Every structure is written in structure tokens, then in C-alpha cells.
Length: 239
Length: 95
Length: 82
Image 1 (spheres, rainbow over the protein chains, first blue to last red):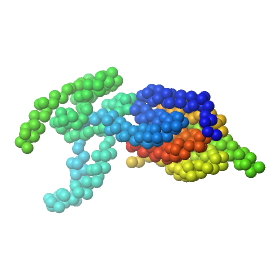
Image 2: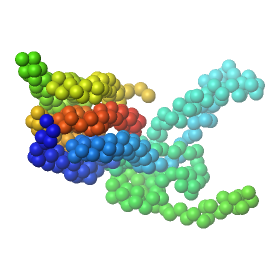
Image 3: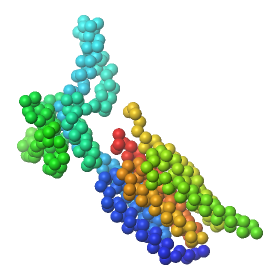
Image 4: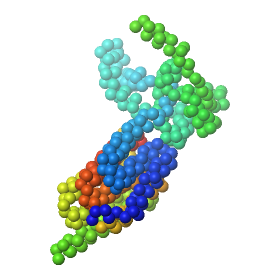
């Protein structure tokens, strides 16, 4: 029973390896490429076992397939993201106002009591958490965000919104590189309803050709590190 | 006599396993839904593979610890994998 | 006994083709699951054919490790798609 493998079987199974490798290269979406990489790993383990290298096959299955794929999936998920800063009402004061408004009539005189001021906030901490995590698209930005989502899907990016209360915080987020770009609602007088500013050169190039020009104007800025970091440096020196 | 019978049964098991594989893998190419394909695939991969391993076991009993281990691994992990894939591939409406 | 590997190889080609042709990520995952199980069974068959214990152990390990990696990847992909 030993040594009965014909050359043809050997050649046919080994030929699967380059086929799977080419398939992996041809994938455009990084997640699809990961799955096909798993198939490549399984086939590679088969070929190595077929050729008698049991240790190599085991390593390929453990490291090449399991560890590499899982790590890459996490890496791709955390790096392929477009963080967009937008101006939106901050959740915290809104909830306080809501609670105050709903109980407004009967609590009008009790609101002078400091204990009651603390109470709604502590009760709504969980609600705040839920609200931040289930943050929905602001109504006035809907058309722009739809356009951006199409763009992000095409490049398998994840769109992450960073709501900030005002323009100043938006600029600050841009300077500290917390966000990759910001979206603003133009006034009614403007021809385009929205303006988008990104600080990543490559994003700008892609958006320039693919975003709908009727919806938004696009611009790019370069964040110069020295002026932005000056206060930080002086803080550090005083440390 | 007994040897021949075992031989026939083992070949029978292997062929049945291969037929299961083909039957369950073939719908994968079609345009059916993920859950339908998952169903046929888990039947094919689990039962077909079990049949093949049992065929091997009858044919070459000297490697029985390995093959029994393979049977257990197949039965447990393929079933759980079916559940996990079904759970992950269906979108939940809330949350 | 050597003839088993031929049909097995042909059946293995089906999920490989499927993984290339289908654009849905879960269909690709199904193809991956299929390939993973099939290759490990093929490794087992080879080990039995050659009466090689070492390869047999690798086959059993690949069988369970492949399933584990699939479950991990499925969970990560579910988080990504949320």
C-alpha cells in the first residue's frame, strides 16, 4: 500500500497551490482576500502533507491559516476606516433638556433643589452610552452621508462619524488628526449644500473623481505639525 | 470470506461518502441562499467525511486511534461550525 | 485504493471555483469551510494510504484547527458587517 501515489495525482494536487495563490492575488476586497487566503492555507497544508512534510503542514495550518487570518482581519478592520468629523448636537445636554422638558411642569419649583439636578443625569448615564453608540445620521447631512457611504463601500472603508458640538471643536479635531476629514453644511446661499474637507491626500484624489459634485464641494488641507503642536511642546517642557 | 465482506463494506462506505460530498457540494455553485447551502454543505461534509473515515477504519484498522479522533472532531466541530456560521451570517434586526 | 484521491480532487475544485466566482463574503466563507474539511480528510486518506502516523496526526489537527479558525473569522466578519 505504500508508495502508490501516481505522479499524476501528485501533479494535480500540487497544481492547486498556484491556482489558489493567483485567486488570492486577484481579490479586490481585503476581506474576500482574507477568506481566499484561508483556502490557500488549507490547500498548502494538503500539499505539504502530500509531499511528506508533516511539520510544515502543521505550521501552515496553525500560523499561516489561523493566526495570520485572524490578526489580519483585526488589522484591516481597524485601519480601513474613514473618520469624519461633523457638527451635531452633543448628546449629554440634550438628554438633560429632554428629561427637564418632560417633567417640566410639575418639577418647575423642585428644580431649585440641587438633589433633583443630580438625579436625572445619573439616571440617564446608561441612556447616554446607548445614544452615543447608536448614533444615527443627522437629518441635515443625509444626502451627503449616503453619497459617502457608497464611496466607502466601493473602497471597503468603514465610515465612522465623530460628532462634535461646534466649529471650533471640529477644527481642533482636524488639527490633532483625530479625524481624517470634516463635513460642513453650507448656508442656503451657496450652490452646493455641503462642503467636505479631508487632510489625507489619497482620499482627496479618490473623492475628487467619485463623489457627486452636485452635492458637495471638496477641498484638502495639510495639517502642519509645528504650529499645532507648539502649546503641547511648551506643556511638555514645563513638565 | 469475512475479509472480502469487510472489503466490500469499506469500499461501499467510501463511495457513499464521495457521493455525499458531490451531492452536498454541488449546490454551492448555484444561486441559492447562504442557509440552504450551509444545510447541504454541513450534511455533506459531516456525513460524507464520516462515511469516508469509517471506510478507511474498516480497511486499515491499525490506525484506529487517529481515525476515531478524526470522527469525534468531525462530529463535534463541524456541527458547532454550522451553528456559528448560521448565527454570524444572518443579520439581526435589532441591536 | 489510490483512486479515491482523483474524485476527491475533482470535488475539491467545486468550492474553490465557488470561492472565486461568488462576491458575497458568506458564500466565500462556506466555500472555505468546505475546502478546509475536504483537505483535512484528504490528508487523513493520504496518511492511511502511506501508513504514516505523523501525517495522520497533522490531518486530525488541521481538521480541528481549520474549524476553529473559521469560527474566529466568522465572528470577526460579523463584527465588521455591523
